[in-house]
Image 1 (cartoon, protein in one colour):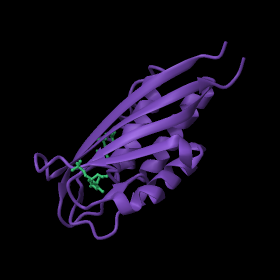
Image 2 (cartoon, protein in one colour):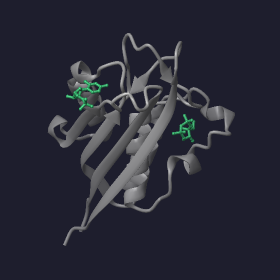
Image 3 (cartoon, protein in one colour):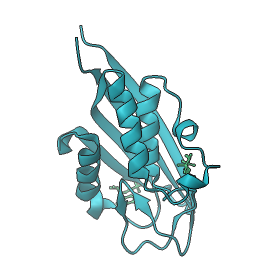
Length: 159
Ligand SMILES: Nc1ccn([C@@H]2O[C@H](COP(=O)(O)O)[C@@H](O)[C@H]2O)c(=O)n1
Ligand SMILES: C[C@@]1(CO)OP(=O)(O)OP(=O)(O)OC[C@H]1O
């Protein structure tokens, strides 16, 4: 019988004016602020990467990409996601579907849902219909902050 594993990941970053906002591998146009981070600060890709690792109890991205390493400064977080996917595949699993929630007050992201899902599907080698993307405001409780929660279902690829 094939085995299945569930993974869960979260990430949060403080937002500051004058920075680019990266989410799901896309630079969000006309954002009034962007993430304060060591890398490009893409909280969607970080939460998904942690979800992949957690499904197989492989730790978290900070272990593989320490934020104390200057080599990771400003890095494209797609590199982090690809590496975590390789680790998962190396253990005989692959993602079957992912679901994520982005909590962000501004800017509104609804118009970018299809683009973000398409980019994530490409990075994860999934169909668009296997990538669920939801947006929530914090109702003004955390306007200077972006938070992402992500789940993934992993399926065994062999045997
Ligand atoms: N950055 C965001 C946040 C939310 N949305 C969309 O707004 C709708 C209402 O969100 P609530 O948090 O008030 O429930 C919902 O449909 C979200 O998709 C958005 O587009 N961008
Ligand atoms: C990605 C890494 C490494 O550049 O740093 P940040 O961009 O600050 O992101 P975070 O989600 O806080 O933690 C993981 C880090 O190791």
